[in-house]
Every structure is written in structure tokens, then in C-alpha cells.
Length: 482
Image 1 (cartoon, rainbow, N blue to C red):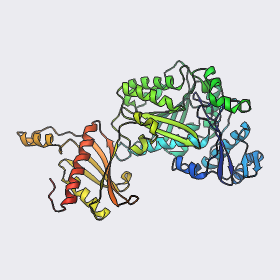
Image 2 (cartoon, helix red, strand yellow):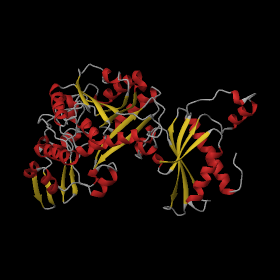
Image 3 (tube, rainbow, N blue to C red):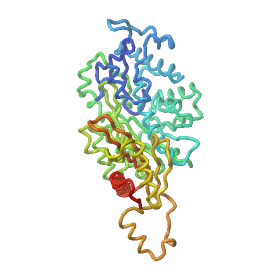
Image 4 (tube, one colour):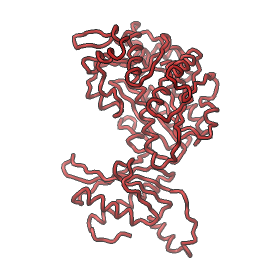
């Protein structure tokens, strides 16, 4: 995909529905030629990504006849030649046509977007926004900004197909790519929801006009240039491995920016420090795992500690993404942290805490005990069966009423009724019970997700208080709560 960010021409050779090959663009630091099984693909792709089950190429060609001439019979079945640039582009058009009713024109001298990987990014952002649906004000539209949309405008097009309320500002520095992007938006009748804005390389990364909107911006996204120079592209180990048969057709603006992706995203961080809560979540994809460490260092130096890291995996091709926010909405660990052992030192602090119990006889008994504890805490309101909590509870606390210090203040107050009462919650969290039967012994797990608030200590103390009270109930079910 032509854009200001490096795009990977990663497409697949399938055999009877099994993904056999995956390949990245020459010079791409994450590119590989690899063999993968469907089970590996299914484990690593987003659970809502339809390409967890690779498409049947014969059936795909029936729905998009232009693909027919690129099909090849091999000893393993029917597939395409991943070294054929024309076949790659036709595959992208075929998938977008059949699965998203999108018609795309892709110039031959700009990079081609891999649909499954691009869809992973969109779905992650959708998850980030939807997790707060029960606490964030409902909006008639979801406003996004795509930095470097490229000739295909793939992210805005996919976003508008996935989300019926989504709209985009999409920037592009390259004139040819901007022209193709406008054409693709118009062809798909999305001009009212997607605005293509051509910018200069020395402009601010975030377009001022978008951030002056009265509604505000819900998210930004970007796939920045990986490399800092042409020499860096040519010296990459993967480029040498692929050799001249894999010549890259992308434009230089798609792959190279002074300082590479780290400098580009650091500039995004610096600009976001001025814009702050004008945008709910700033995000960017990264092509090098080492870049994550440097970007997290920049965020931590700026005391921007509300951030999230994820990983997009297809076969052995990996991409990473980072999101950060200056607001008080928090993400659960399932969206904000990954299990990669080499990255644990830069992971954000945990927003999901768990406590296990073996004393309760049934899951119903555990949940009843939990509800009894929650209802006993002064100043806490409990919404039953919060849909976003998978059957758990959404808990709101206007202030700390459970700590010893808070109880002492209440006792010593001359007239507690006259004390100033806050109107906005200091803490919102989701609490749910699950039963774990996988281990040697059955146990019930009470899980706490921090949803909203600025005081981590308050969230952790609330969890500890509830856990202690539950432990007391487990030992003595008849004890009075208070």
C-alpha cells in the first residue's frame, strides 16, 4: 500500500485452504518466507479476523475472475506465485472485493497492502474503543485520523466498512498516492466519510483542521516509514536474503524518513503532548521490536504512563503497535500487554488483577459472595451483569471509602453530611468471576479490570479490600459485612 509508512507486500500461497507461504516486501525488517499451518495462523491472528481460516483460492477466483489467470497448480494444490507482483495486487483486490465490497485501484509503483495484517490493526482499534462503551459518552460518529494513508487508503476504507459510524481524516505527503487515494474513496462512495488531505513533509504530523473539530478525535493510526536512509534499506539482512528477484516497487517516501520509524513516532509523541485529550487514543504500528523500547522510553519520560502494546503476527512476520492516552480511560491487559518475555520490562503496569479462591463450593456461591462484598462498601454503586464485563459487574466509586484512612476521616468529620461530595467517579472497574478447571484443583478466579480513573493506588487498594473481604466470607459465610 502506498503511504508515508513502509508497507509490506505480504501475500500468501494457499493449498486447499491451508496457508503455506507468507512473504514480506524486500528490505522489510520483519519479512520472511515461511511455512505456516492453519492452527498457527488461527492462534496468532485477531479472533474476529476472517483470514484466521485462509481462503480457498479456487472459490475466491470464482467471485473475482481476474484472479483466475494467476492461479497455479502445485503438488500441494492451487495457489498463487508470491513472487509475482501482479498476482499480489490482484489477490488484494479480490479479497477486498469479495469480503468488504471494496473496489481498489493500485498503482504499480506503490506498495501493496496485505489485507489480513491491515485488518488486524483496525480490529485492535475497534476493541480499544468498544471496551469503554459502558462508561464513555455515546457519540453519533467515531472520528479517526490515518497518518500516511497511501494510494489505497486501506485503513479508512476498511474502517468505514467495519464501523458504520466511523469517519476519517487521512493525510498523505505524496501527490500521486493522494490522487489515487481520493479516487479509491470516490469509487467506493465514501467521500462523505473519508477526507483525503495532502500535506507537506515539514507539516505537523497531526492535521490541525481535524483536531479543531468540536467532537474531538477518537483515535489516530499510522504505519510510519521503517528506515532512515536508502543505505539502511540496502544493508538490511532480509533484503540480502531475498535477492534481486524480489525487487521492491514502492516509492522512497513509503520506506524512508529521517531517523526512521523511531524519529517519526517520537515526533508524534511530542505533538500529542500539546494536543493531549483532543484525541482519546494515539496509536502507531512499528516494524522493529527494538523501536518499542525507544518509544516507551519517550512516553515514560513525558509521564505518559497510560499506554498499550500489542503484536500482529502472520506466520513469522511480526508487527507491533503502541497506543497511548492522556485521558482516564484504561485498557485491560488483554488489549494492553503481550506475553513476549523480551518485552516485559517495557510493558505498561497491569490493569487486570486476579485473585483465586478454592473455598467456595460453586461458581454461583462465589459470585453471590462477591456481590455481597461489593454492596457492603459505602459509596460504591454496582451495575449488575455489565455486558462488556462478560457477565460481571461494573463498579463505580465516587471516592475512597474503604481504606482505614478514609474510615478515620469519616469518623472524625464534624458533620459528614456537609462534606463536599464529588460528582464524577474516582474509580470505575469491572469485576467478574470465572471458574478455572484446567489446573490440578478447581478454583474460582475473581478478576478486576481497571476501566476509568487516574489513581492506580486507588484501584489496587479497592481490589485488595474486596479480596480480603471475600477471603473472610469464604472462611465464615455468616459474617456481617461492613
